[in-house]
Length: 335
Image 1 (spheres, rainbow, N blue to C red):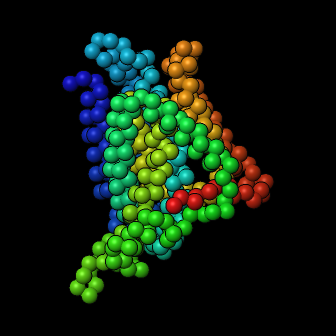
Image 2 (image 1 turned 45 degrees about the vertical axis):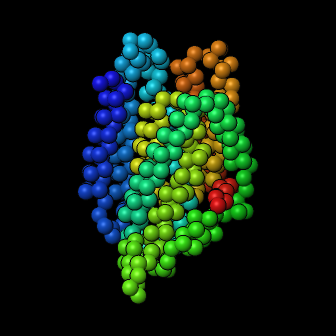
Image 3 (image 1 turned 30 degrees about the vertical axis):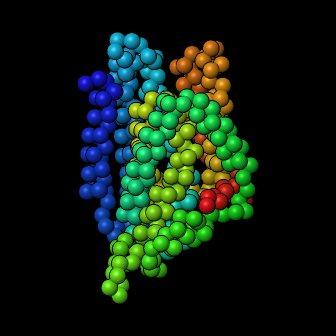
């Protein structure tokens, strides 16, 4: 068993235990989550990701070797994981704003939030695994696809930075909802917490079912930005899979922790946009950058840019809100 396989095995075991713990002790049906509980769960998932980072750091020498040949710097992969995780984690905050819109649009009761988020996030993880697998296989077969990803990130970052808030996302106008409404019998209630019920002798789908599908679909839309961005940080499938899954699993607790404050981060979108532009430019110029800058140094630079841009945009948002500047920069016109 090589080191990469061992890391995947450890990741799978830890993840399984964590999910059982989360489902069995931290999630109870029809129970609202308090800020204190959300804080504990957020520390739990972030702590687990950081523990995995430490594990990767310890395994660094073995991960750097492949069949006795040194492929990467000793601690390059753990640093890439940390950078990718922070990138995904910051993008998760943008997800939360859209999740709030979906819950409000379909009048979901707060007692159903936890379970609906859990099912939606587990579906999102499944979709992301499929998406990542296809992306990794595509890049392995056609390396020039990375240049397309880089150009896409440049465009996305520019669009995100300059976006206005005029066109707000309406879940009832989304293509996903219209598709569900066209092909499935939907009802305008939550079925007392059920996803499928029977009415007049036939199965019908409740608003909770619709919300779960929308949560998974919206996350997949965000993944169109985040996964190419992670590929710009690391080419190793291990880093791409684990950073994505850890970030998405922590999304539910982050939702309960930040749902009252997420709209205060008016300039977070601009911080994320700068990071996407940086990663896109790095992907486009990687061939020339590798001739002048060592790979591990570039990883440190990427980590620094992510930390400065994300923390700086959040801090600047807080300062501007304290000054009473009424800014609402976030554009969520995802259709």
